[in-house]
Length: 520
Image (cartoon, rainbow, N blue to C red; front, side, top):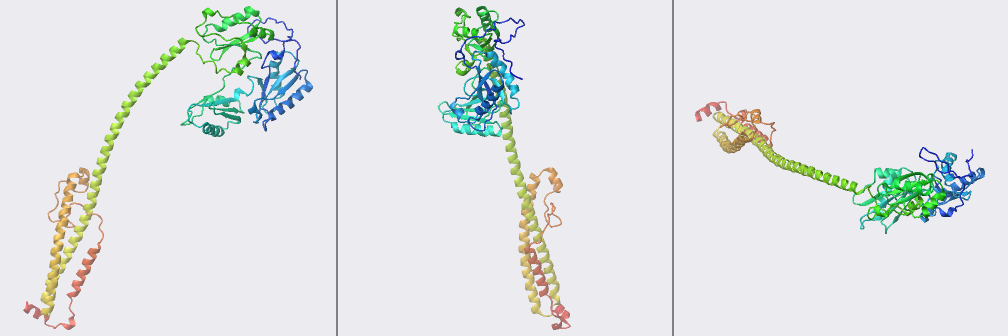
């Protein structure tokens, strides 16, 4: 299969139903009169700087060996492009040496079919000179005191984490901008849908504005967005001036601000570019809105659209949008006031709840401290009562032993020990009374502070503290008790007293009982 080369010029197809025949004579116009009659070839080898051009050059050599026309590969002449391993180069027709946009347009589908096995190589119309702007994104830092290198570092990390492959990037400190050229075609769309955000950095994300061409040598008239029926006026002007068959199709781009048209022949294109455009009556133009002179779409893309303001179709739309925005702001302010009232109420309730929780916690801490003190006092009262019982038992035992002692010396000794035990008994009884008073006070506190269910559970409902407490008559159930060292000493002392009262039977006379009874 070879490229269907026709020596006669074929105009672009018409989008309307009628298909008039155009004079197919070739033109003697020079290629120098037009710019942008080239194609861009993407996804070439990018293993090293210059490898993409070399890859395309090899493909062109094979093509020229079998085809009747001749192609020539051209590298990107941007200085930064020569320093980076880019994946694209440009393609032009060298023979025939005439203006043939039809050949260039038909080559796109043909070359994409011929090179379909070249690992994704893609042929498209060239949009602008230099870098491939369809895959370029730019980020402008708004705050002058922020670091452009820091922003670039964050962008590099983000693109790496999202696997956005970058073929070239550079910065301009004076313009406060960072540029990226990506390898994949869909990255710029992904950035528009989900732009990167970095806290603390105020930046704008964008893409150099351009219009994708639909046919080589497409012409434009800029700044027509405020002119009613601008497209119809220009369509009628072209057909009226250059013939019914001069216009193949037209469109409005860049928010209806740029008129684009495909004309039937390069000679008509040149005439439309050279002649003064008399389509609009200056007296009927909106104030301050003068359309630009006609120019090629490729030239407009190279110059950039950033110099022209982004306009809506009419100022009436702006006023409507402004009124809608103000209404939306007022509604948001009302919702914000309502939310503020709810937040204030919640804050007051939270403060009140916090105070109640602190009061409850303080009261609970007091109850826990009182309970701990109660258990401690109850343990001491029980221990004291146990010592009193032991002392009383020992005293009674000594009183019973005195009459049976064999001699007055032993009886006096036992009496002395009994007196000592009585002294200890009185001291222990006084200590017991003090502890019992403290325990009674704690019981009164519990009667006043504890909830009814807890008092009922502890057996304290309507029962005053006992007047003569004992371990078996306490109003509160005793906690689990452990033997204290002091209680062990008391038991050892009682054992010693009992051992001291024992008498060796071998040294006592047989009539000691009678003697003791008579001496008493």
